[in-house]
Image 1 (cartoon, one colour):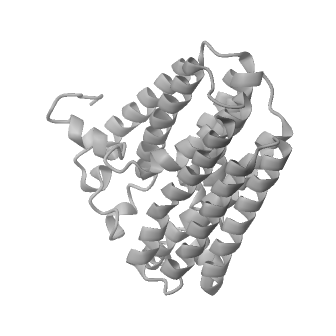
Image 2: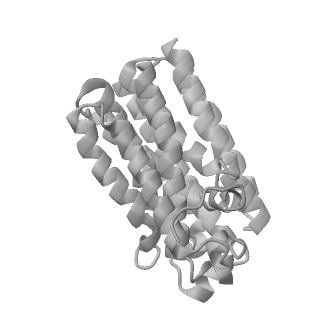
Amino acid sequence: MTLDPTPRRLPHYLRLMRLDKPIGILLLLWPTLWGLWVAADGLPPPYVLFVFVLGTVLMRSAGCVINDYADRDFDGRVERTRARPLATGVVTTREAIWLAGTLSVLALLLVLPMNTLVLWLALPALFLAASYPYTKRFFAIPQAYLGIAFGFGIPMAFAAVHGRVPDVAWVMLLANVFWAVAYDTEYAMVDRPDDLKIGIRSAAITFGRMDVAAVMLCYALALGLLALAGLMSALGPFYFAGLVVAAGIAGHHYTLIRTRDRARCFKAFLHNNWIGCCIFAGLALDRL
């Protein structure tokens, strides 16, 4: 069976792409927008903005399909994921492969009109998205790999605007790695009992009883690196005010995760949308 985009099948595909849960799109979109706005010193060219926003949606959707394909034998044994389409069998593995391939090809077609460097960077971006789900088998902190995958839109944004990738882009990418470790560790704290049973690795398991301290340290490092990026790019007070607000939100997360209650940890994870939003709002206001 290939794809069957009829009203009967479409809702299952949309759930497999997790379009009903846009938090992942937002966590991928915010750093991409940071990169675009810093690279363009304000509003980027309309077509570049269109490509990166739509590309974010397509690649996150493809990543979700690949993730569920990779975890199809585990998701049924995890409380939070047992109702996913592949775990329940309402979508076949062949359909999932076709869907992931279609989404990836569409994302690549979007960047074809762009410069050569963007095209070259699109290849590792695709590899990172496709390989991340498998890192949970052997990486002690797969969240760091996720941070690279979710932040790779930053160097691509600079490449699209300038045709090169300056040092500040890599500083911002490293900041995103620490941010991803922070928020995805909060996410992993929700699944830790199940992950221990089935042998999946995560930062929450690796950090152990130091998990809360590690999350807060990663927030501090991420915001510190973003402050450095602001100095490197001569950004002004609105940007740094956005970082201060984001730091306040990160501090609030300590009150949510310190008891390691699963529902509160998941709430903290979802709340990271506001951290990314505040940083972008400060950046956008500053570049006005």
